Image (tube, rainbow, N blue to C red; front, side, top):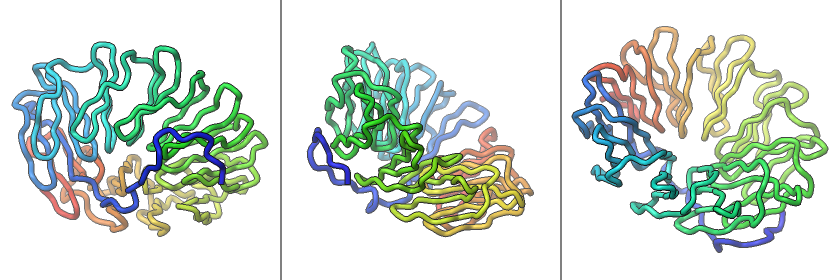
Length: 358
Protein backbone atom coordinates (compact mmCIF):
# COMPACT_ATOMS: atom_id res chain seq x y z
CA UNK A 1 0.00 0.00 0.00
CA UNK A 2 1.27 3.47 -0.80
CA UNK A 3 1.85 5.48 2.31
CA UNK A 4 -0.39 8.56 2.69
CA UNK A 5 1.95 11.53 2.89
CA UNK A 6 -0.41 14.06 4.44
CA UNK A 7 -3.81 13.97 6.12
CA UNK A 8 -6.20 16.88 5.44
CA UNK A 9 -9.63 15.97 6.67
CA UNK A 10 -9.02 13.23 9.23
CA UNK A 11 -10.44 9.73 9.21
CA UNK A 12 -13.49 9.42 6.98
CA UNK A 13 -16.08 6.69 6.86
CA UNK A 14 -17.43 5.74 3.46
CA UNK A 15 -21.00 4.52 3.29
CA UNK A 16 -21.25 3.69 -0.41
CA UNK A 17 -21.33 -0.05 0.14
CA UNK A 18 -24.12 0.07 2.71
CA UNK A 19 -26.31 2.65 0.99
CA UNK A 20 -29.36 1.59 -0.95
CA UNK A 21 -28.16 1.07 -4.52
CA UNK A 22 -31.42 2.41 -5.86
CA UNK A 23 -31.79 6.14 -6.42
CA UNK A 24 -34.48 8.18 -4.79
CA UNK A 25 -36.77 7.89 -7.82
CA UNK A 26 -36.43 11.48 -9.03
CA UNK A 27 -37.02 12.59 -12.61
CA UNK A 28 -38.31 15.73 -14.31
CA UNK A 29 -39.96 16.58 -17.60
CA UNK A 30 -41.89 19.28 -19.47
CA UNK A 31 -44.95 18.57 -21.59
CA UNK A 32 -45.67 20.30 -24.89
CA UNK A 33 -47.69 22.96 -23.08
CA UNK A 34 -44.61 23.99 -21.11
CA UNK A 35 -45.82 22.62 -17.76
CA UNK A 36 -42.91 21.39 -15.64
CA UNK A 37 -43.28 18.23 -13.57
CA UNK A 38 -41.30 16.18 -11.10
CA UNK A 39 -41.64 12.44 -10.70
CA UNK A 40 -40.88 11.55 -7.10
CA UNK A 41 -40.86 7.82 -6.27
CA UNK A 42 -44.23 7.09 -7.84
CA UNK A 43 -45.87 10.51 -7.61
CA UNK A 44 -46.10 13.07 -10.40
CA UNK A 45 -46.32 16.71 -9.29
CA UNK A 46 -46.57 19.88 -11.34
CA UNK A 47 -43.97 22.37 -10.13
CA UNK A 48 -44.35 25.18 -12.69
CA UNK A 49 -47.17 26.26 -14.99
CA UNK A 50 -44.69 27.79 -17.43
CA UNK A 51 -41.68 26.37 -19.21
CA UNK A 52 -38.51 26.43 -17.13
CA UNK A 53 -35.28 27.76 -18.56
CA UNK A 54 -33.13 24.84 -17.43
CA UNK A 55 -33.08 21.95 -14.99
CA UNK A 56 -30.79 19.22 -13.69
CA UNK A 57 -31.61 16.10 -11.68
CA UNK A 58 -29.47 14.45 -9.01
CA UNK A 59 -29.99 11.48 -6.76
CA UNK A 60 -31.74 13.42 -4.01
CA UNK A 61 -32.59 16.79 -5.52
CA UNK A 62 -33.79 18.62 -8.60
CA UNK A 63 -32.49 22.10 -9.41
CA UNK A 64 -34.03 24.41 -11.99
CA UNK A 65 -34.38 27.99 -13.15
CA UNK A 66 -38.02 28.90 -13.63
CA UNK A 67 -39.57 31.22 -16.20
CA UNK A 68 -39.16 34.20 -13.85
CA UNK A 69 -35.44 33.54 -13.45
CA UNK A 70 -35.62 32.20 -9.89
CA UNK A 71 -33.17 29.47 -8.95
CA UNK A 72 -35.23 26.76 -7.27
CA UNK A 73 -34.57 23.43 -5.64
CA UNK A 74 -36.86 20.46 -5.12
CA UNK A 75 -35.91 17.97 -2.41
CA UNK A 76 -37.66 15.89 0.22
CA UNK A 77 -41.01 16.48 -1.43
CA UNK A 78 -40.94 20.28 -1.52
CA UNK A 79 -39.72 23.06 -3.82
CA UNK A 80 -38.04 26.18 -2.49
CA UNK A 81 -36.38 29.28 -3.88
CA UNK A 82 -32.65 28.96 -3.40
CA UNK A 83 -31.82 32.33 -4.98
CA UNK A 84 -34.06 35.00 -6.48
CA UNK A 85 -31.72 35.35 -9.44
CA UNK A 86 -30.43 32.62 -11.71
CA UNK A 87 -26.81 31.57 -11.24
CA UNK A 88 -24.30 32.05 -14.00
CA UNK A 89 -23.88 28.28 -14.03
CA UNK A 90 -24.93 25.32 -11.92
CA UNK A 91 -24.06 21.64 -11.94
CA UNK A 92 -25.68 18.83 -9.99
CA UNK A 93 -24.32 15.34 -9.28
CA UNK A 94 -25.70 12.45 -7.26
CA UNK A 95 -24.97 14.03 -3.88
CA UNK A 96 -23.75 17.57 -4.50
CA UNK A 97 -24.49 20.75 -6.41
CA UNK A 98 -22.30 23.73 -7.25
CA UNK A 99 -23.44 27.09 -8.54
CA UNK A 100 -21.80 30.39 -9.42
CA UNK A 101 -23.19 33.72 -8.27
CA UNK A 102 -21.62 37.16 -8.13
CA UNK A 103 -18.13 35.87 -8.82
CA UNK A 104 -18.27 33.29 -6.01
CA UNK A 105 -18.54 29.51 -6.10
CA UNK A 106 -21.07 27.81 -3.82
CA UNK A 107 -21.64 24.19 -2.87
CA UNK A 108 -25.03 22.86 -1.82
CA UNK A 109 -25.09 19.71 0.27
CA UNK A 110 -27.22 18.34 3.11
CA UNK A 111 -29.81 21.12 2.66
CA UNK A 112 -27.23 23.87 3.10
CA UNK A 113 -25.38 26.12 0.67
CA UNK A 114 -21.85 27.27 1.45
CA UNK A 115 -19.55 29.66 -0.35
CA UNK A 116 -16.37 27.72 -0.95
CA UNK A 117 -14.48 30.22 -3.11
CA UNK A 118 -14.74 34.00 -3.35
CA UNK A 119 -13.06 33.88 -6.74
CA UNK A 120 -14.23 31.52 -9.45
CA UNK A 121 -11.28 29.91 -11.15
CA UNK A 122 -10.97 26.49 -12.69
CA UNK A 123 -12.83 23.75 -10.88
CA UNK A 124 -14.04 20.20 -11.32
CA UNK A 125 -16.95 18.49 -9.62
CA UNK A 126 -17.40 14.89 -8.55
CA UNK A 127 -20.29 13.13 -6.86
CA UNK A 128 -19.11 14.21 -3.42
CA UNK A 129 -16.26 16.72 -3.82
CA UNK A 130 -15.14 19.83 -5.66
CA UNK A 131 -11.52 20.50 -6.61
CA UNK A 132 -10.79 24.12 -7.47
CA UNK A 133 -8.11 26.78 -7.91
CA UNK A 134 -8.18 29.80 -5.65
CA UNK A 135 -7.03 33.35 -6.44
CA UNK A 136 -3.37 32.39 -5.77
CA UNK A 137 -3.62 29.29 -8.00
CA UNK A 138 -3.53 27.02 -4.95
CA UNK A 139 -5.43 23.75 -5.35
CA UNK A 140 -8.20 23.22 -2.81
CA UNK A 141 -10.78 20.51 -2.27
CA UNK A 142 -14.28 20.79 -0.79
CA UNK A 143 -15.40 17.54 0.82
CA UNK A 144 -18.13 16.80 3.36
CA UNK A 145 -18.65 20.45 4.26
CA UNK A 146 -14.99 21.43 4.68
CA UNK A 147 -12.43 23.10 2.42
CA UNK A 148 -8.81 21.97 2.62
CA UNK A 149 -5.69 22.94 0.71
CA UNK A 150 -4.45 20.16 -1.57
CA UNK A 151 -1.42 21.81 -3.21
CA UNK A 152 0.24 25.20 -2.84
CA UNK A 153 1.56 25.05 -6.40
CA UNK A 154 -0.24 24.68 -9.67
CA UNK A 155 -0.68 21.13 -10.98
CA UNK A 156 -0.96 19.48 -14.37
CA UNK A 157 -3.79 17.49 -15.90
CA UNK A 158 -6.03 17.43 -12.83
CA UNK A 159 -8.87 14.91 -13.14
CA UNK A 160 -11.69 14.79 -10.63
CA UNK A 161 -13.37 11.43 -10.11
CA UNK A 162 -16.50 10.84 -8.10
CA UNK A 163 -14.71 10.92 -4.75
CA UNK A 164 -11.03 11.47 -5.59
CA UNK A 165 -8.67 13.72 -7.51
CA UNK A 166 -5.68 12.62 -9.59
CA UNK A 167 -3.01 14.98 -10.91
CA UNK A 168 0.69 15.56 -11.61
CA UNK A 169 2.25 17.94 -9.09
CA UNK A 170 4.91 20.58 -9.70
CA UNK A 171 7.64 17.96 -9.16
CA UNK A 172 6.19 15.82 -11.99
CA UNK A 173 4.98 13.27 -9.43
CA UNK A 174 1.72 11.40 -9.94
CA UNK A 175 -0.52 12.08 -6.94
CA UNK A 176 -4.01 11.04 -5.84
CA UNK A 177 -6.15 12.73 -3.19
CA UNK A 178 -8.54 10.20 -1.70
CA UNK A 179 -10.41 9.80 1.61
CA UNK A 180 -8.80 12.84 3.20
CA UNK A 181 -5.29 11.70 2.31
CA UNK A 182 -2.78 12.53 -0.38
CA UNK A 183 -1.02 9.53 -1.92
CA UNK A 184 2.25 9.83 -3.82
CA UNK A 185 1.76 7.11 -6.45
CA UNK A 186 4.69 7.48 -8.84
CA UNK A 187 7.77 9.71 -9.03
CA UNK A 188 7.28 10.05 -12.78
CA UNK A 189 4.43 11.34 -14.89
CA UNK A 190 2.23 8.47 -16.16
CA UNK A 191 1.50 8.03 -19.85
CA UNK A 192 -2.24 8.21 -19.19
CA UNK A 193 -4.77 7.91 -16.35
CA UNK A 194 -8.52 7.60 -15.89
CA UNK A 195 -10.62 8.27 -12.79
CA UNK A 196 -13.81 6.84 -11.30
CA UNK A 197 -15.14 6.11 -7.81
CA UNK A 198 -12.52 4.80 -5.39
CA UNK A 199 -10.48 3.88 -8.46
CA UNK A 200 -7.83 5.30 -10.80
CA UNK A 201 -6.41 3.32 -13.73
CA UNK A 202 -3.07 4.45 -15.17
CA UNK A 203 -0.18 3.43 -17.35
CA UNK A 204 3.12 4.36 -15.75
CA UNK A 205 6.03 5.94 -17.59
CA UNK A 206 7.20 2.49 -18.75
CA UNK A 207 3.74 1.55 -20.03
CA UNK A 208 2.87 -0.87 -17.24
CA UNK A 209 -0.86 -0.80 -16.51
CA UNK A 210 -1.75 -0.25 -12.87
CA UNK A 211 -4.87 0.33 -10.82
CA UNK A 212 -5.23 2.39 -7.64
CA UNK A 213 -8.19 1.15 -5.63
CA UNK A 214 -9.13 2.26 -2.12
CA UNK A 215 -5.56 3.16 -1.23
CA UNK A 216 -3.85 0.14 -2.81
CA UNK A 217 -1.99 -0.06 -6.13
CA UNK A 218 -1.80 -3.27 -8.16
CA UNK A 219 -0.10 -4.00 -11.48
CA UNK A 220 -2.90 -5.23 -13.72
CA UNK A 221 -0.95 -5.80 -16.93
CA UNK A 222 2.71 -5.43 -18.00
CA UNK A 223 1.61 -3.53 -21.11
CA UNK A 224 -0.53 -0.47 -21.76
CA UNK A 225 -4.11 -1.35 -22.85
CA UNK A 226 -5.51 -0.18 -26.16
CA UNK A 227 -8.60 1.31 -24.45
CA UNK A 228 -9.67 1.93 -20.85
CA UNK A 229 -12.81 3.06 -19.02
CA UNK A 230 -13.35 3.46 -15.27
CA UNK A 231 -16.58 3.27 -13.25
CA UNK A 232 -17.54 2.63 -9.64
CA UNK A 233 -14.82 0.33 -8.22
CA UNK A 234 -14.41 -1.03 -11.76
CA UNK A 235 -12.06 -0.79 -14.72
CA UNK A 236 -12.83 -2.22 -18.16
CA UNK A 237 -9.97 -2.42 -20.64
CA UNK A 238 -8.84 -4.16 -23.80
CA UNK A 239 -5.36 -5.55 -23.35
CA UNK A 240 -2.55 -6.00 -25.84
CA UNK A 241 -3.94 -9.40 -26.90
CA UNK A 242 -7.38 -7.96 -27.67
CA UNK A 243 -9.09 -9.47 -24.62
CA UNK A 244 -11.78 -7.52 -22.83
CA UNK A 245 -10.81 -7.48 -19.16
CA UNK A 246 -12.63 -6.29 -16.06
CA UNK A 247 -11.23 -5.21 -12.71
CA UNK A 248 -14.10 -5.35 -10.24
CA UNK A 249 -13.44 -4.35 -6.62
CA UNK A 250 -10.05 -6.05 -6.51
CA UNK A 251 -10.62 -9.00 -8.86
CA UNK A 252 -9.51 -9.14 -12.52
CA UNK A 253 -11.37 -11.42 -14.92
CA UNK A 254 -11.46 -11.97 -18.66
CA UNK A 255 -14.90 -11.16 -20.08
CA UNK A 256 -14.22 -11.81 -23.77
CA UNK A 257 -11.27 -13.29 -25.66
CA UNK A 258 -11.69 -10.83 -28.53
CA UNK A 259 -12.11 -7.05 -28.54
CA UNK A 260 -15.60 -5.52 -28.53
CA UNK A 261 -16.64 -3.19 -31.32
CA UNK A 262 -17.54 -0.65 -28.64
CA UNK A 263 -17.94 -0.61 -24.89
CA UNK A 264 -19.19 1.79 -22.24
CA UNK A 265 -18.53 1.52 -18.51
CA UNK A 266 -20.51 3.95 -16.41
CA UNK A 267 -21.21 3.70 -12.68
CA UNK A 268 -21.86 -0.02 -12.03
CA UNK A 269 -22.70 -1.35 -15.51
CA UNK A 270 -20.55 -2.28 -18.49
CA UNK A 271 -22.32 -2.49 -21.87
CA UNK A 272 -20.56 -3.66 -25.02
CA UNK A 273 -21.11 -4.94 -28.55
CA UNK A 274 -19.24 -7.86 -30.11
CA UNK A 275 -18.18 -8.43 -33.74
CA UNK A 276 -20.93 -11.07 -34.10
CA UNK A 277 -23.45 -8.30 -33.32
CA UNK A 278 -24.27 -9.56 -29.85
CA UNK A 279 -25.10 -6.82 -27.37
CA UNK A 280 -23.95 -7.70 -23.87
CA UNK A 281 -23.71 -6.22 -20.39
CA UNK A 282 -21.75 -7.07 -17.28
CA UNK A 283 -23.24 -6.31 -13.87
CA UNK A 284 -21.80 -7.54 -10.56
CA UNK A 285 -19.68 -10.11 -12.35
CA UNK A 286 -22.54 -11.60 -14.38
CA UNK A 287 -22.52 -11.33 -18.19
CA UNK A 288 -25.90 -10.83 -19.85
CA UNK A 289 -26.41 -11.46 -23.57
CA UNK A 290 -29.19 -8.97 -24.27
CA UNK A 291 -29.71 -8.79 -28.04
CA UNK A 292 -28.46 -10.20 -31.33
CA UNK A 293 -27.90 -6.67 -32.60
CA UNK A 294 -26.23 -3.58 -31.15
CA UNK A 295 -28.64 -0.72 -30.38
CA UNK A 296 -27.81 2.65 -31.84
CA UNK A 297 -28.61 4.34 -28.54
CA UNK A 298 -28.19 3.03 -25.04
CA UNK A 299 -27.73 4.80 -21.75
CA UNK A 300 -26.24 3.80 -18.40
CA UNK A 301 -26.85 5.47 -15.07
CA UNK A 302 -26.35 4.21 -11.53
CA UNK A 303 -27.08 0.45 -11.79
CA UNK A 304 -29.32 0.51 -14.84
CA UNK A 305 -28.84 0.10 -18.58
CA UNK A 306 -31.62 1.28 -20.93
CA UNK A 307 -31.89 0.90 -24.69
CA UNK A 308 -34.51 0.64 -27.44
CA UNK A 309 -35.12 -2.78 -28.96
CA UNK A 310 -35.83 -3.51 -32.65
CA UNK A 311 -39.57 -2.90 -32.04
CA UNK A 312 -38.92 0.62 -30.73
CA UNK A 313 -39.67 -0.19 -27.09
CA UNK A 314 -37.37 0.52 -24.18
CA UNK A 315 -35.65 -2.41 -22.50
CA UNK A 316 -33.86 -2.02 -19.17
CA UNK A 317 -31.34 -4.11 -17.31
CA UNK A 318 -32.54 -2.97 -13.89
CA UNK A 319 -30.14 -3.99 -11.11
CA UNK A 320 -29.42 -7.22 -12.96
CA UNK A 321 -33.01 -7.98 -14.06
CA UNK A 322 -34.03 -7.56 -17.72
CA UNK A 323 -37.42 -5.84 -17.93
CA UNK A 324 -39.59 -3.84 -20.30
CA UNK A 325 -38.84 -0.17 -19.75
CA UNK A 326 -41.87 0.93 -21.76
CA UNK A 327 -45.17 -0.65 -22.72
CA UNK A 328 -45.39 1.12 -26.07
CA UNK A 329 -43.21 2.27 -28.95
CA UNK A 330 -41.23 5.36 -28.00
CA UNK A 331 -39.72 8.16 -30.05
CA UNK A 332 -37.16 9.07 -27.38
CA UNK A 333 -36.34 8.40 -23.77
CA UNK A 334 -34.25 9.71 -20.90
CA UNK A 335 -32.62 7.74 -18.09
CA UNK A 336 -32.25 9.51 -14.74
CA UNK A 337 -30.55 7.18 -12.25
CA UNK A 338 -33.19 4.41 -12.15
CA UNK A 339 -36.12 6.24 -13.74
CA UNK A 340 -36.91 6.04 -17.47
CA UNK A 341 -39.00 8.84 -18.97
CA UNK A 342 -40.09 8.01 -22.52
CA UNK A 343 -41.71 10.18 -25.19
CA UNK A 344 -40.86 13.31 -23.25
CA UNK A 345 -42.43 15.51 -25.91
CA UNK A 346 -45.96 14.30 -25.20
CA UNK A 347 -48.54 15.61 -22.74
CA UNK A 348 -48.41 12.41 -20.74
CA UNK A 349 -44.97 10.80 -20.92
CA UNK A 350 -44.62 7.23 -19.75
CA UNK A 351 -42.43 6.64 -16.71
CA UNK A 352 -40.77 3.41 -15.62
CA UNK A 353 -39.54 2.99 -12.05
CA UNK A 354 -38.72 -0.23 -10.19
CA UNK A 355 -40.69 -2.50 -12.48
CA UNK A 356 -43.83 -0.33 -12.68
CA UNK A 357 -45.25 2.15 -15.19
CA UNK A 358 -46.70 5.54 -14.30
